[in-house]
Image (cartoon, rainbow, N blue to C red; front, side):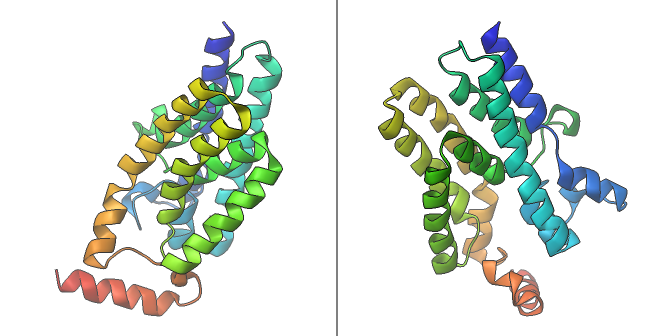
Length: 212
């Protein structure tokens, strides 16, 4: 019963998608605009910085809340943290009411890391910020974070089965970012510098798209 409750509670909380609902209020489906991702990064592209940042923060704290709630309600379940983490992220990526086409899970992963350890969260956030600035591509952040976190968690908690279960998030994130890797190769992936050179970045993408 604890396992069932842990999965259900965390998955349903993970399904709450502010980017999708705000876009619907504005009259469009975010999954059909921008990068096609129902998450904070695409909300930033399609609806501006303020809404994008709000969606990212919301997703971080919904994951934090899901993990903490699952731990409180299912505290006797040994793997409550890991199961709630995976379930919440999968809820964000595969929401049932959106025909399983949601976001890509980075902000939710951040919230789950924060629930485990604020110190680990700050360290990983700092490392990922460096990666994003050096590569100029946001998509490298979820890929590297999803690889690093199971290792970090396993080393700190000595929970090998839990660390192995967390790698399911890694596999799904890599699958969800295949299109991003393809766009990097053909020069049409939006760079991080879009935040401060928006017009130049969109012109670059438009030019590369026309040359394909």
